[in-house]
Amino acid sequence: METKIKQYVNYQFRFKSDVETEDLKAEIIANLIDRYHENLERGYDEEKAYVEAVKQMGDFSSEFKDKVSKEYSIKPHIVDVVLLCATVLAIFSTVLLLFSIVAGTILTAISIALYGSGAYYLYANAQYVKKENKDIEKHNILLSKIIKYLKTNFIFWAINISLIIANILSSLLTIVLLPSGILVHDPQSLLILVIIFFIIILIIAFIILFGIYSRILGKYKYMTGNVDPKSYLNDSYKFIKGRDTEKYIYSRKYLKLTGGKFVPVISLVMILLCIIPLTYRYTRHSNYDGLVNIIQQILDSFQFNIWPIGALLLIEIVGISVIAIISLIKKRNKSKRLIILLYVFFIPTLIIFTNQLDAVISYPNSSFYYLDYSSSALIFIFMVFIGIMLIIRLIVKLRLKKKESKVE
Amino acid sequence: MNLSGDELRGHTDSIILSVLEKENSYGYRINKEIEAISDGAFILTEATLYTVLKRLEKQGYIISYWEEGLNNIKRKYYSITETGIDYLNQARKNWENTYIVIDKFLGGKNGN
Image (cartoon, rainbow over all chains, first blue to last red; front, side, top):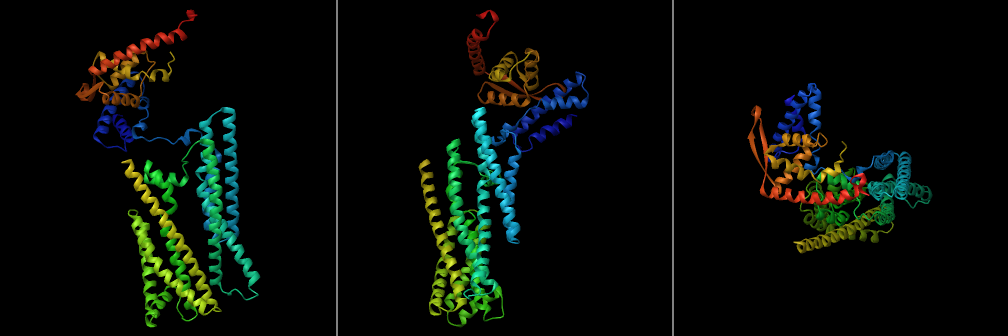
């Protein structure tokens, strides 16, 4: 039984292993053994004597600063599960939409309905608690539950809605415009069209949903006086990283918008978009597909005395890939790498873009150059977008440094 | 006897110090002593006891040392310091004053 007591105490302190804790453990074990013997003298059997002694140990969790979030001070309700389900469904339906528009749409609708009704219940409950029980703390916790998953949901809803609308629009356009012969009748151009629609609608959806989110957040802050609501993503991130300092909260607010994995992910998307026009151009002339086409185009450019473009393409594709992958893997020193990234793709893309613009002007009736042009324009828009992001990021970083030096 | 935990919590420091004032002691025996004096109404959990002991040691009211006792078990003994005794005397004074005031409100039925 004494070994059992030792095991129990060791288990309670399994996360700590310094000299002080070893002392404390030895002390507690000795005392619990004393108590165990006392219980035996009282006439308890071995098992009961052990349980009663161990019960006496109490809760050492404050020793580890293992504080339970305020959120859990009220009993979890079925509505919490509903909100979580809505979030999971929103994420899942994004994946499903890639395979089946109908199923994805239904799932998205269910997710929105679940979240809406869940949020309404929590809101109503919060109002009731405030009015009847005068319990402001509970009122605030209930409201914070609505906010917790909201951001994640909004992001996925925006993606889902954009995918759905882009699909509807492009199929409508194909039906209307196909007989007139304006649109090229092949799956590739249709895909590009869907992507263009998707991106435009996504930007609009993000702007609208961001507006709604800020208004809800504003109202939440007004109602609770809570300035920094914990979102589901932030909580998970902090849980994984295990850090929660003032500086982190401050920088997180601003840098999250402009940096992190956002830029490398966008640049990866851009590489894909680069590949589409490159492959398209050569499907008319060569028997090769995909990546082989790009290599061939690069080789061709060297042959036909336009080697700078081939070289730039090479630099761009290799450069962006390497930097994007490094940025995704390594976390430190990201800003410097991002500036290099900006230079690596800014100049070549600009040159390729003007080159193709020139081609469109020279051959206005050529439909395949039109597609080249549209995707290049898309790349250009992205490029400007990321450029602005990087500039904002730099400014924020500089301001952060200034603020830090002032604090010191 | 029905003792409210909240009422006692504010006095755990003084209670432990008062036990140590009589003689040097270790965790289990301190707890036993408290149990005996309060007729079993007040038992500290190990967690509370060590949090308080640690705090008192940090504040310099008590010091600790290891000693081998019965059955060859090593125990950590605590002993009160001069500052600890000063603190305890201050706490006693404060308690007397508090008692007088609170007793005016809640004391005996013939108070009015």
